[in-house]
Length: 484
Ligand code: CTP
Image (cartoon, rainbow, N blue to C red; front, side, top):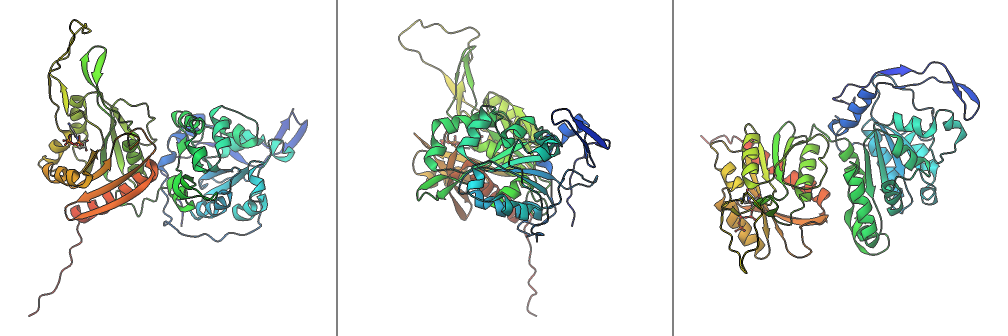
């Protein structure tokens, strides 16, 4: 069973047979190849999230324990995906052993790089046995430095995943440190970097950690998790590392089983801004995080995703087409253009219900004690999509402060939707947070999705959308023979 990759591997070139390291005053013989075409390498970096693997979810690979056949960098032109797995110090390091097996089950070559702290939790021998490669632990490893150490690994990797990612590594990555092999190769690589945070929930919630995570996200680092639940320290909350199976699936979305495979999905996200004059607008507190997470989850479920985004500061998830808009009118037009031929529309945007009847051409001056604004209804995008002659499977969101289920069910029927995801909003709830919970409703059914990180929640939500889409748009008809 081979790995189906939908990109062209970059041109590879033998580096010649002789190598001289002025630093180590060493001449060596190299027998491996690596990409020399930087455009090709960049193409790989850009297409990481389009790796589709035919290995079924959950398949287990038997590993030749103890086989170590470095140097690992020699690859054929049909090389499987190459993952540098960074393991940092934390109790979740033991879960990384399972992760190596899951990645290898997807035919990935896995090179483990451990920090000094990680070696206090799990021995390099464990990872060596599971990965079939000698584990790298030091920037100053003379043998690997002969092969350029961190640079060699940085070039070799198709993807870098750090799991578990401790608060310390997040801080060091955010500040651009290069004080060990893992941080140095992260600086040197063009490959996409993902981190799976794992730490005590207070450490995760600390503003320093959150600010580091935001810095990393803004630089395009993919943050996978954390999940909520019981922690090794005996406390409860967000900080658990994602399970190995989920991390492997995030790196290698399995196309074969995805209910949205090949489906065109349009998602609107973020707030809208309705201008009052050239410098003022009416808007709301939506951060767009939930909609962006839903877009990434739909992409991972095999969909071709168009994301219509209001004004937010979030990076576009790789592999997704993004259209930026500002007002409800602009979002209306962009959505209607995008839904032509679409299979699913998910309205996750917090669209203004009212817009100023007129926008002043010049800055309004404060000439009186009171100001009355004349507002008019903004177009209801969701209802208008659901009312199309051949509507896509249409999903709405309902943000409510009270009577969540009652109001959401009312919107479901009033807007003639296939499904609605309701959540409670208010102070410290849903808006501009990294976690959320949803109540998903459809005619005659409901599903509660527990409070968890928006990334994980989005994956569960998309699974329900896929399931309902398949049931309602492609129902399995069972023919029952009539009794004669
Ligand atoms: N929505 C939309 N266009 C609007 C307003 C809302 O497409 N002008 C969509 C949102 O994207 C969301 C759903 O409608 O998917 C619910 O929005 P919400 O504002 O919560 O509901 P309303 O129908 O506006 O009802 P109310 O304000 O009375 O709660």
